[in-house]
Image (cartoon, rainbow, N blue to C red; front, side, top):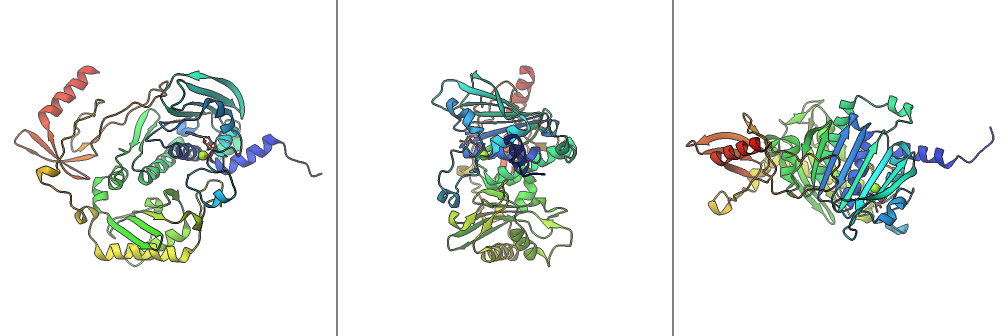
Length: 424
Ligand code: ADP
Ligand code: MG
């Protein structure tokens, strides 16, 4: 067969295949775009395990209407300009490929409004071609809706797992971003039901409590180390707190969630002698490395890295965990919060409703976005997940949260529950 130049459509499919292999990959790219846009709230909604619908709503800087079409061009990005920039990457995205890749394998609609525009710009693409443009009233930020993912690619569909399993992968991914960006409020709704929500309070330990549960977070040990410009911070579990899979070992390099063999091996080395085979610790480590020592441009999905001085970093990770295990003091005991009245704060429940108090667990509602509502509502403060530990004089419910003790005025809570019930 003679050599021929592939058509742009075939080239687009090949390139898209590298970036978008499953629904979680779409969510990853859209969530990264939201974070790069400075969003403080990121709502993710999926249906059919992500094949029917993936919608990501953010309150970030938005895309000017005049640039909406350009954003879908391959290698169109606002994040870098020169080759030099490639070695000084400070954003999660930089290749300008994600939107083009998603549009090559799904139907995409974007509604986006920067602060300078009074209405949102809208663009609709089918099979990578623009089929609609318009305007829509919405709040500042961006909503990307992806439908019929891989509908034109039966081969790719064959390699996907059940909707439940794909949803699980999306949920896992979002929890990792919630750990890396505790100041951002993430929520996922899958098949119409709230699956996970972080508070966006900026407190990493609280984010860990949301992801792994309060009692697990309280048992974690703090690990930290500094070697010149390289800084390591994070948490690791004591040897009696293990899991059956490595999915609970997370690394964030310059706040990018990465899966890196060298770092995973460093963790294995630290725990090898003290946990049984086939068990894995819970670890969440943040590494700050000078951008110039890091090559993130190794793989289109940007999940792999190359860094200068790998052996040194591996040793830093191993020794930091080793030290944390030797000291063995749970994080919350190391930095006790003041329990005096001056350290207490009264929290007013936000306007939207908390679900009724359940037997021993009080978890607060995640706002469910209206499908047609592209704006991000402003919400009041939220309580962290609380565990009821007792009652005092028929007046207060005593709860334990990640930041310490909470006293819930039970009569006011009851009034609130009744009020919300009537309001429904
Ligand atoms: P990259 O993130 O690598 O730049 P993408 O294809 O993901 O490439 O996005 C292209 C461009 O579209 C981005 O550089 C950014 O300017 C814009 N963009 C995409 N998503 C968003 C968003 N949620 N908010 C604001 N701008 C966005
Ligand atoms: Mg991107």
